[in-house]
Image (cartoon, rainbow, N blue to C red; front, side, top):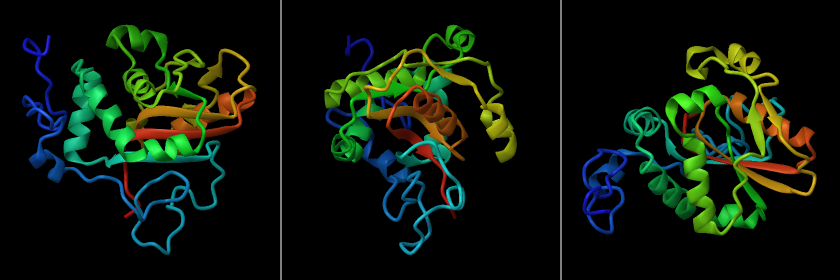
Length: 229
């Protein structure tokens, strides 16, 4: 199968060299998320004396803590766009491998019992053909040996794209847009997977749905995230 469809670098979309899922040159063009970062959402901050980013200061998030893979800039933005809208599901395997390499120890240290992808509204999933967060979650679960709960919660409304809204509109857009499908009181630690983190509105709404169903600590990992400077 790989002879017919050889693995491609998710950054440049060229055929990847053996042993290099991301081209060495492309890796230099994308920024890995490294310290200093916000101790809540994982967003890069300007200096070590800054414990929280501007979005998290004075805000009570519903999630416990989060981590991200890359800074959401041009090359990462284009990669995620192809992944979502041009059916490049093969990128999901590379994203998951990179997440496991970067944050696998952190995930295991937090005793994650289940990985849950942020769900799409059913109509949107039918149109797209897949849920991008689910693709990454399944592969990450396989790598780390953690169960994946694809249907732990559902999206109850077809909300407007968050990128079209300001920070206040984003929060209201997602209010009560997720609902847990079952009691999750037995799950003390859950890891949510999504593609992009901006202000945290999606993650808060998703985490709240799980907390209201009895979940304990809610962590998250995403592929791309903005910066605080």
